[in-house]
Amino acid sequence: MEYLSLKQTAEKWGITVRRVQVLCSQGRIPGATKIGSFWVVPKEAEKPKDQRIKSGKYIKSSKE
Image (tube, rainbow, N blue to C red):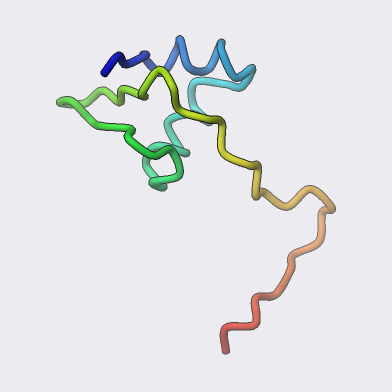
């Protein structure tokens, strides 16, 4: 399996390196692996859907 660095993945997906780091640490990129202190992402990995709140409103979850 071929892997890409965070920088290569960020350029491919058009997002920042830090955002790719966050997605990796949250487990949202299947197959992403941490080697030492560096993350690597499979070349075939798809960009996950952005689940951040964009409306400026906090949406209360129904977990009570």
